[in-house]
Amino acid sequence: MRYCERHEMHNCADCAPRTPRGGAPAGVWDGWPAAAIIVHAGGKAHLPGCRHIEPADVRPPHYGWVPAPSAGAWRRLSPSDPLRATHGNTERVAVSRCMSCDASQ
Image (tube, rainbow, N blue to C red; front, side, top):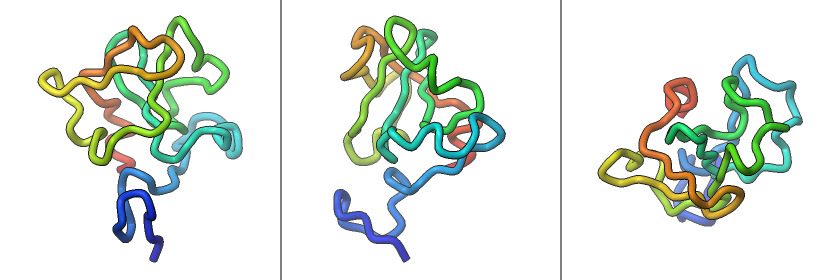
């Protein structure tokens, strides 16, 4: 059982290692923090390993990201609780989650 030091719990869904599902080859997302959230121009949030985005494309101005979001940020993400990027294009704001990424949680 994996213990998350950051959130002080076992098997933390926010920090669990993510397995790419048909996207980039294994290892391409290795430089990304496990809990990172990537924000696309359309307001959609993705997780590292998402099959909808290419790792090399995740850079400003199209993307922003939050390397260390607050606990539960992924689950709370909605139009009433948006997430603003803290890195890359910090004008990007996520208001919804990628359905593929959400299914992997």
